Image 1 (cartoon, one colour):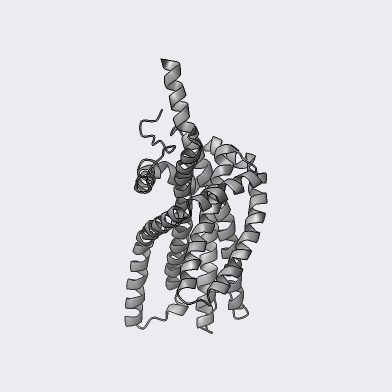
Image 2: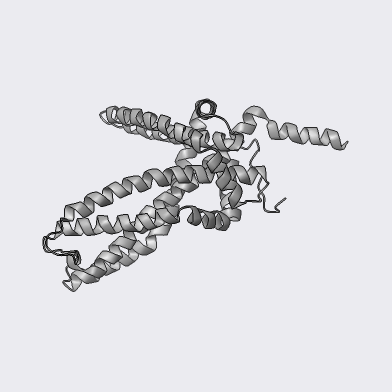
Length: 306
C-alpha cells in the first residue's frame, strides 16, 4: 500500500472531510495535475483558440479600423460568434471529461489504495461511456428545469438569491455524487442517480455547507492562478494608456489579453475538476456512514486473523 495513502472510507465529521480534501491534494496534487493535463491537452489548445477569437472579435468590434491582418472584408462579428460557440463546446465537453476523469481517479485511488494507473482510469471511463452519455441527456433536462426555476426565483428579492445558491449547490452535489456512484460501484444510470439524490437529500444542509466551503476555497485557488496574468495585463494596460498606445490595434495587446483570458478559462475548468475530487471524497464518507462496508470489512479481517 502507498505510504501516503489516505483512507477515504471513514465516518468523518464535517471538519475532517474538509481536512481530508486538502490532505488528498497535498499528497496527490502533482500526479493528479499531470494526468489532468494529459487528458485535457486538446481542451487546452481549443481554449487558446477560443480566447484568441473572443479577444480579437471583441477588440475588432471596439475598433472599426482593426483588420486582424487579413484585409478589410473580414467581419469581426464572426470571430466573436465563433469564439462564443467554441467556448460553449469547450465548457460542455471539458466538464464531461473532468467529471469522468476526477471520479475515475478517486475511485481508482480507493480501489488500489493510492496506486494510480492511467490505463485503468481510461478503461474505466470507456467502460462507463454509455452510462455517462445517458446520464448527460437526463442531466441536460434537469439543468433546463434548473434554469426555469432560477428565472422564477430571480424575481424574489434576497430569499430568491439564497434559494438559487442552495439549488445550485444541491444540483452540483447530485451530479457529483452520481458520477462517483457510476465509477465506484459501476451502477446504472437509474441506481446511480437515485443514490446521488438520496445522499444529497438525506444530508442536505451538510452538503450545501460543504459545497459553499469548497466553492470558496476553490475560488481562492482560481484567484491565485490568475493573479499573475492579471497583474501583467494591468501593468501593460496602464503603461499603454500612459503612452497613448491604442490597445485595440496592438498585436502584442491581443496576445497579452488572449493568454490572460485563456488563463482565466483554464483555471475555472481546473477548479471545476477539483470540485469533483471534493465530491468524490464526500461520496465515500456518506457511503460509509450509510452502509458501513469498509468498517465491516475490517471487522471481518480481524475475525479471520484471530
